[in-house]
Structures are given as C-alpha cells and as structure tokens.
Amino acid sequence: MCSLKPGIERDHRKRPCTKCPWLTRTDLTEFTEADMEMLQEANGRRGAEAPLNAPIVACHRDQPGTTHAWRWCAGFLAVVGEQHLGVRLALAMDALPPQAVNPPADWPDMYPDLDALLTARAAQLARSSGSGPRT
Image 1: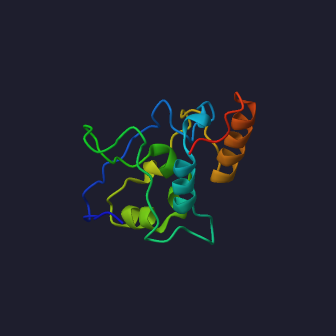
Image 2: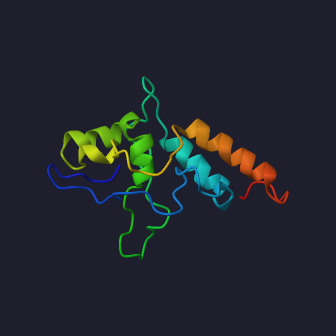
C-alpha cells in the first residue's frame, strides 16, 4: 500500500483515459496477461473485499518517468474502488474524494465488474487474428 496522509488528496485520474481497460469501447487485446493478473489481484467483491496489501491500480499511461507517475486509475476506482480496503481507507482519511468511486452520469460506458471485462477480453482475443493472448 502506498503512504496516505490524512486530508491530503492522493493523485488520481478524475476521468478514465482514452484507452482505459474499464471502458467498454477499449481494445482489450492490447493488454497483456500480466495486466489482467494484476487486475485480478486488485479485484474485490462485496463481502470479499480486496485486502489492504492488494495492489491499487494505477493508470497504465502513468508510468515512472512521466509527469503524473502512478496516478490511480479512474476506471478502477469507479468499478472496484469501494470493494478494495486500501481505497476505502483513502476515502476514510479524506485522501480520496467520494466522487472518485461514484462517477457522474456523464461518464462513458464501463464494464460493471472485472468478470465482464475479462469475458469481453476473451471474446476480443477470439475474434482477433488468431494470435491468442499476449504475454
């Protein structure tokens, strides 16, 4: 878990990036098996929340050396955030605003959960040129 400071907002995207994997319009074949495994490690469900030591997903476009290295992913926060104990802790400490996990109605269409995202990725891979999953 990253360090959180009460009342100091954690850097996070306010809206999904244009190729956020949580957006239903995104080509999920561009993501690797390692990407999908990390999403699975960070995933939680009501009653089976992701633990504090589970990764919190950063935007795949915000990597080390970029202007906003490791901003938390807006799509992840909106879909999985409330089912991740680390995100809940950030909310409780006022290190993350409530709207990060409750996006406005004008957001683009997103997968409702990780299972739907993985199912869509499998279908996209099956339709692709037969190259199979990337590793």
